[in-house]
Image (cartoon, rainbow, N blue to C red; front, side, top):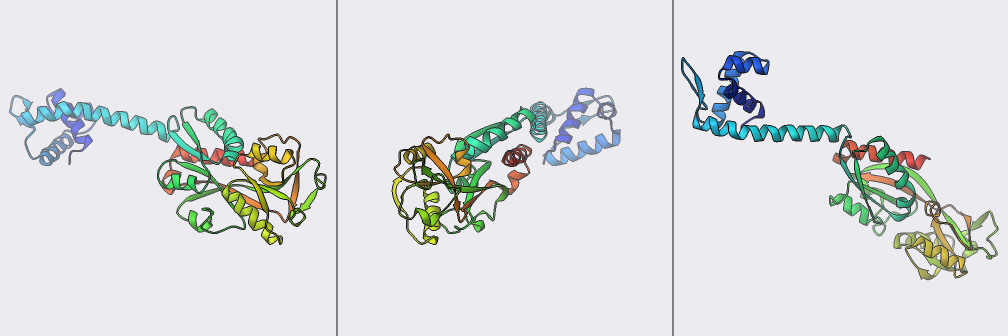
Amino acid sequence: MIEARHLRVLRAVAATGSFSAAARELGCTQPAVSQQMKVLEASVGTPLLIRTSREMRLTQAGEVLVRHATGILSGLTAAEEEVAAIAGLRAGRVRLVSFPSGSSTLVPAALAALRAAHPGTRVSLVDAEPPRSVEMLRDGDCDVALAFRYDSVHDDSTGGAAEEWGDLVVRPLLSDRLVGLLPEGHRLAGADTVSIADLADESWIAGCPRCRHQLVDACEKAGFTPRIDFATDDYPAVIGLVGAGLGVAFLPELAMESVLPKAARTVTVEPAVRREIVALTLPDLARVPAVAATLDQLERAAAR
């Protein structure tokens, strides 16, 4: 195997014409240069130098190796500098995938802080709900996935059960409580707290399949099955439907931060229903400086 240090010695010998001069250039001893040349010749299986009492010159094989050494060593130097830049957060790339309400609340603050601290780090963002976002992480299509799971739902349909994240690095960010959303003229719109059971006869507007699963679970624990008349993954659409008096809904508090309700009122629902917001990555990726910095900034954004 040809090693870069041996190529550097060969190039120095070829440039200076002797072991002693090469040793002075490299800052080592003449015997060390001689020994490394012997190792290199043994590695390639042919002489690289012709030594006489008057001169030292390259063999044909030596000339070929010196010619390639320049490009090889230049490439290694460039690679070392690029890796050092990434390790020092002067460069790097992070591919982030997030669910929509996370993209509109946590992500902007985190990425703005990351850019301010490390302007050479580039971050791309794609929207995807779990479990798809978690699949993208495992498939190598992203480096960090913002995801969530509900406290009371742990089955295969959710993609968020704790055991399903056992192979990942999980960075907890916040606990996000679901709130009730009622038309402003609703009989309970002015209440501080509403029991889920009080909404048993209402028409419901459901969100994504995971949220719907959680809605059904919470209502069934309260003793009824919700009548879902409208279904949409778009939070502004949910708010619009509620504001028009077409039904009631559950929405995460995080989703309400980026949407201004019109003709709708939020109420605290009991018993409390929460989802855990986390940032996920692979164990090897967690040691990459740019990924670690992204996780730190997401955690700081969630704490504000």
